[in-house]
Image 1 (tube, rainbow, N blue to C red):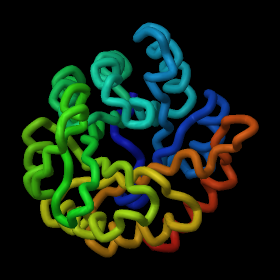
Image 2: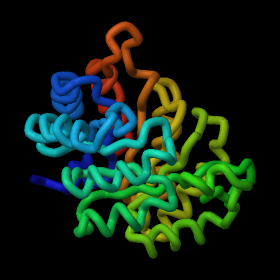
Image 3: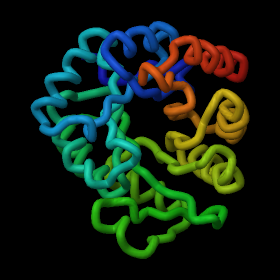
Image 4: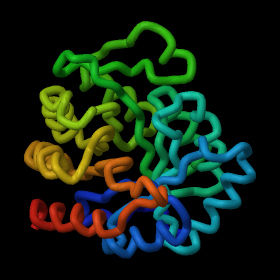
Length: 246
């Protein structure tokens, strides 16, 4: 199965949550296949149950699966790595300290593996203490360039900047975007992104020159009654992407 995400003109792919296999199919089509659909390991009691379910998704959306933690939960890190080894998805979400394990178990370099770093309130400085144990300690604050180099050392593909809280950390995001562009690294803005702020956030990353961007748009486009991501909102996001990239 295809392990490389379908980027729109090799630059942007959406990352949204799939509420069901049919919902994943609907969103996949709404995005013209330039998307990965998140399935969260936290929703499963066992590896076997997660693997069984994710295989159903794989066959319907050409493996456009993003194996997720679940709200960035560091305690899901090992399960994500184990499940991803079997599933071989297009995209893997990891905490900073879990990147090396995921890459090693995947056994290939095609799958995108992100590493979660958090804002510090200090532009140019990020917190990499996002693992199961380290997240419970004092923040480990390092320059963004150092974080990128460490992720590259571990076989990571991109930075997952979370939680962005929409535009709350936009000045930090601007510096991160520039660093990703300068160091040939992918960027995944995450947290509080919606139809209103999506264009501004994506524009910053594009204008900085980031080569590949995967914006995560989650709860803001999920129907609260059904728990499903709205395909019509995917189309709106896709139209914004086309406007900015064309």
